[in-house]
Amino acid sequence: MQPSIRPYLRTGPGYVYAARTTAADKKGEEGRIARLASNENPFPPSTAAVSAGVAALATVNRYPDNRMTDLIEALKRFHGDHTFVVGNGMDGIIEAVLRCFVEKGDRVVVSTPTFSFYGIAAAGQGAIVENVQRKDDFTVDIPAFTRACTGARVAFLCTPNNPTGTMTTPAEVREVLDGIGDCMLFLDNAYVDFAGDDYRPLMDDYQNLIVGRTMSKIFGLAGLRVGYAFIPAWLEPFYQKAATPFSGISSVSAAAAVAALADHEHQERTLRHVLEWREQVRSAVRFPVLPSEANFLMIDVAPHTADEVVATLAGHGVLIRSCRSFPGLGDHYVRVSIGDAWENERFIEEINRL
Image (cartoon, helix red, strand yellow):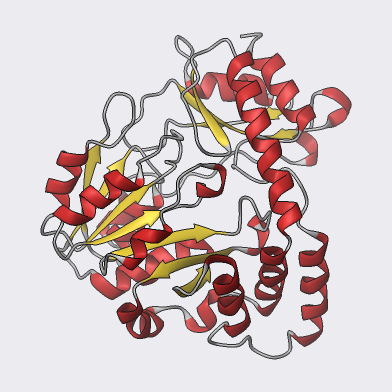
């Protein structure tokens, strides 16, 4: 007899991935594909990171350092003397945090529309997921979100938000933290390197705040799956008990991450490029483009549907993301990453043909 699957896996699509391509799908100029669907860094990783990763391959017959000591020390050099944990992407950290706090029937609050994995991971832990819709301009309804968080175990807030690009200011986050009692707030700062606000000082004032970060974006290590988070010191021993052994990170990923943190020139180059092209793309596209503080833009393509636009552009060698799968969004928004110069130019040309 076939064992039964948990009910939450029988409803909904699960995490929806951005479109990829194969050699057989290649179209467009010179067969080049503009890959603008996954918010990736268009530049290869730092050469120092590549060299460190290659060197670490010689030792992969041994397990990694279970405490990730070198990477934690590198994070402290980069950010200051905070308490850090690392994981297999920020997703791995989210799962470990939920294992620390959530039991079946507990409430988890999510500010939507946003990254769908928060709700998927919470449901997997047996939580009751409560989505709090953002305002019409996609900013957070602070009073409504704060009320919902009261009595919940964990709440998720993304800023800059994926896929809208909108910011929740540190002052607004502080207002939330002051009003939610002992609910743990997970603040997803995956894209904060492209924004002007700094949320790190909040860690000094609150014991119920986790700030998640990633090395997939400005550091260009998406394929190595390195996430990290600032956590309150009291949580660290409990987190380590709940976390995947060896933090879910390979010794190769850890070594490359240490080197990438030290290569400030690579980070600054990426930042300059994204800020310049973010404004150029926003100004050039003839559809309404939302303000963004991230390395992507969300565009309202009505009267077209998002899926129609994604399919049309893919046929011309430009991959972008339909936002239809994001909870709380309609079917007429697309998300486009800031890519290399030629990719951005191709995107502008193709979307303006619609």
